[in-house]
Length: 440
View 1 (tube, rainbow, N blue to C red):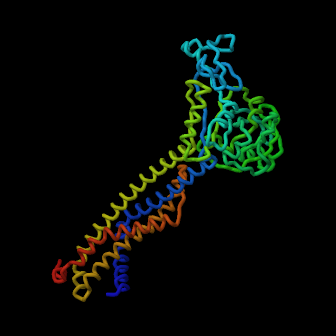
View 2 (spheres, helix red, strand yellow; view 1 turned 60 degrees about the vertical axis):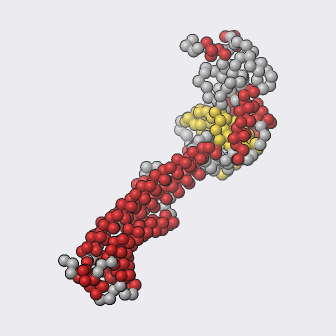
């Protein structure tokens, strides 16, 4: 029997049992939709991770200090943690502090707190790291605070994030300007009242990003000239979110906005991403000389990216496992239906064999039926995946559908039908004509 005749026979059999074909294909429909959604969610997750970390340099290392201790003293550079311990510059800590040295001791605190002092990372620490830590390409320091901002189309003062940064912050954070220029070293050294605003801030305050350039906003009741507007960055997973931040020169912010009440972060860029661990060890050594017994929070962008990617891969693996299980269940359903079909059509098989159909013809007929059912189920699964995409996206899950995902879903469906349909087809082809004709 020719292949065209076999296909015609298969189509006739399937068209006469449309409802049974749809029910048989339910497992394949679900499996195909799951496979397509797994790939779409996995791709969307990878793109989301890439976008969230696009403003982080792969070799970036962030250094910060968080303390629950009461703030003592002040000054441009934090003092050593333990009184009497010399810092990196050879200046002794100075012994037991007293009330006359601006120490304010909480009566509920342990007396050991008298020997501790707030650590504030400074530009001196940044310069130390730049000089004494090898294998780094750049280093900067920044801090954030929140304060009142007025101007533009704002009817009342609003609370916004203010970031004090150095000129090289833009390059280190992979930022780019949509209008104007970024802050300069001269702005910082002269403590000039200039600022750069994020894309969302510019639209919110002025209604137009280009209208914001060279205009004035009032930060903490002082006028600041907007020297530029940043391009839109979208969401970021950590650090400063550029779109919703106003950037001012580092020293300008210290003088007019925050005073010394800041907790800066020093960002070091490793020249070689493969030597980040070594650079971190060198950083710890330098900081230990300046601040004895202090524990700094040191993190690197590579570790953050790997953690986010691993989380996404774990989710994708879980979904793939679910899809495989669904496909197996769907394949077993096809197998059961074909076994029933062989039982119901035993006389038909006997007649076909009596008319000269070979064992191969019968095998191909039932195998084609299995493939057609799984193919139809796969197509319906792809349509289901497309249909439920808006529902999944409503839960803040990024879904990136693709033609490759659809083709892979179809391929998985057909392969499943072929594998699970082979044995029933083989059993049908192995029937003895005389026995099949006499089967009631």
